[in-house]
Image (cartoon, rainbow, N blue to C red; front, top):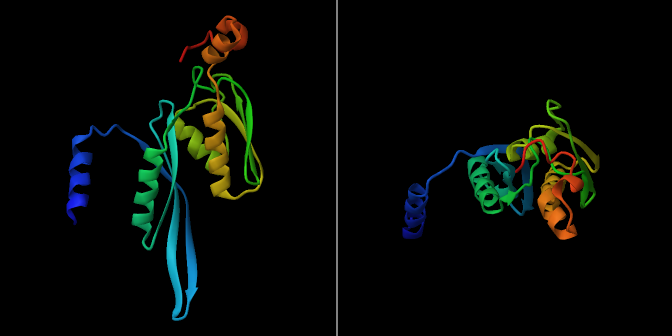
Length: 182
């Protein structure tokens, strides 16, 4: 362990670590063909969230699986975003595209649950959204679907922000607002 690594380790141990939901969404083995044969490596797609509206995604690449997961987790923690929520759902419908993957997220009434598949479910649940309807269209590439979902959540706007910008009351912007403010 180098001096730099030990300093980082001490800094991490001093910081209060809140409980984060960490999920490995996808693990891929990649091969590089070289003169002597093949060199294998692993790519891990990791989603980290606190269940209270913060979520991040990360991609880690390494020769061993645990190292790839650790790298992906660290990147996800650095790239956390805040997701605006109204009660247990999102404030409005949104459709976003990342590469050939297209994801549609729609608010749902309380008690609906998370209607989502694979990568979308992991990102949405890690963010703490309890009621949502989703549809993944286009490419089924898990990495692009996860990135499209993350992009969609980052583009969401809170009802209060939209109401302030328009100069109208919040109730006029979002019918869901009266249930449970952010």
